[in-house]
Image 1 (tube, rainbow, N blue to C red):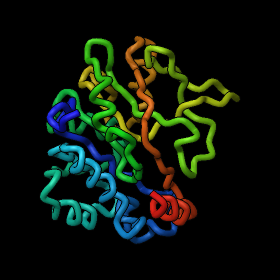
Image 2: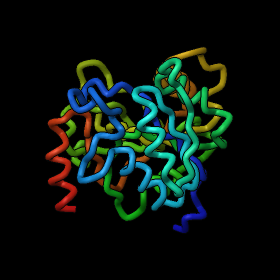
Image 3: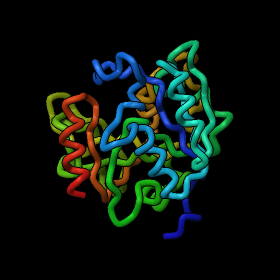
Image 4: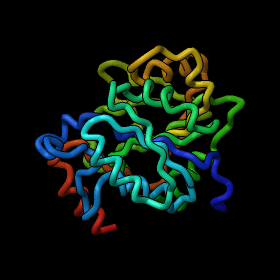
Length: 240
């Protein structure tokens, strides 16, 4: 599939969090600047965007924002636009709403601490091929437990034969894990709460309306939420 067939030319990169689970490495640097396999986490994400042909990245900043902003603005590709949350950390949903004027419809959204290895097709084309704005408010990139390195949780979603999503039931294990990568319609953001809030509020509404969908990723995804996860991730990356 050609790079021109991407559903969007822009991604929002969520980089404003406090990185509490990554302490003590985040005591003096924002989590997206923590190095894995020789480069900051956010560079892994931005490099994947560049490789896929995504041209613009809207990066939100809050914690130790000066260092992160200076680092990402050095890039030529993708072109980086800063969404400044120094005054208030807005969480994932509030962050998207604040940056909405810089985001086309639809837009990709991904966490700055994501590391993954693409399968036969890259993550952003996997989403683009499946995207249908007539039936979807958001399309989430999901992985099975077998493709999620370092992950030891219960999973996040069930997915039916059409790709429609429902939440994991209490006390159960769900087969699919959210990678932190999605394709989002502005329709998802309509009538959003003011200030800081989680995207989960908007996803729950989309589930009720039958408009939250998923696609199974063909690559491998790494959970890199703690310092202990860095060495196993680096070993796996070396093996390819």
